[in-house]
Image 1 (cartoon, helix red, strand yellow):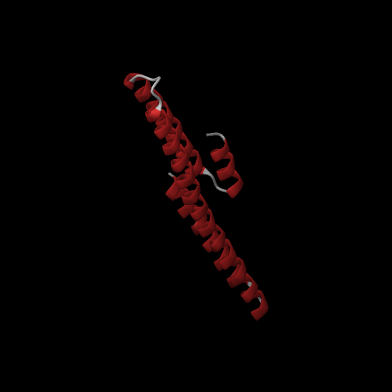
Image 2 (tube, helix red, strand yellow):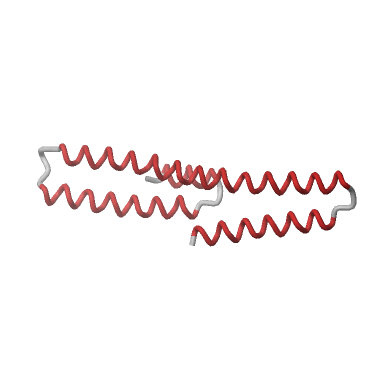
Length: 114
């Protein structure tokens, strides 16, 4: 779902870039269209990288929490497992929210909700 949305967005950017280049009437307009296209594609690359970084950050925080649960002598094994299962459910939803984000702001919002 996330990959298809990104592919669709890239195709949309490419189509717009091609249209802009085809409709350009001067060499300067062509160069401007090429620059806008390159910038838009770079923004997509940056978004993908931000998603990867966000998921890694969340995974590290979750692992620290799981380690803390494992070290807690006041919890039974059953309680520990129940907590870890719930944390993993929340983590999965967080990953989904990050994957579905289309801006860096949405990525940060998804991280903040965890």
